Image 1 (cartoon, rainbow, N blue to C red):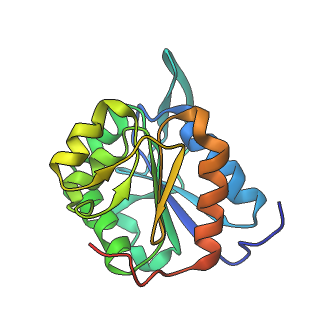
Image 2: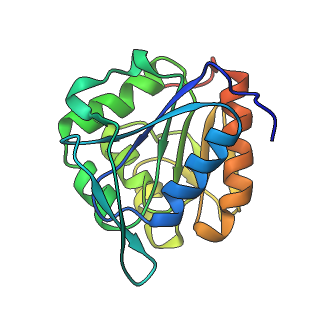
Length: 187
């Protein structure tokens, strides 16, 4: 991958119980593309991954949520898992942080169960997106058009289903960050 994202900063917002591959793989792709990547956690402390069927590695945090703003970054990435988005979707600071990216028209990417966070942030209505199938009805109920596709892009907003879709997800994430702000992005 070229250094197409030199000078770009990307936040990965996560809490304990994120699906390990859904943070490590996009982070690696972003770093290879030249981006500066910060793992942002609610308290700025390390977080333990969920690795498919059991607890995985602990990942260091680069920043605490209270110490960052949307204006610090060019894009936001949200890994899934079950525990991680369930915690973040009830965290008002996390919801405000997420919503600010949509208001600024900046690229946002979410995979697996991460759209739960987006539902609570109030940013999915009228959006075409995908996710792990178990939350499809949640997204429909929130006004999204849910489709069962490997990766979906809607005006700078990238979604995918599961770790098996990471190659396509990562490629679209990098592409959307290269493109920058999207006028069709909305909250």
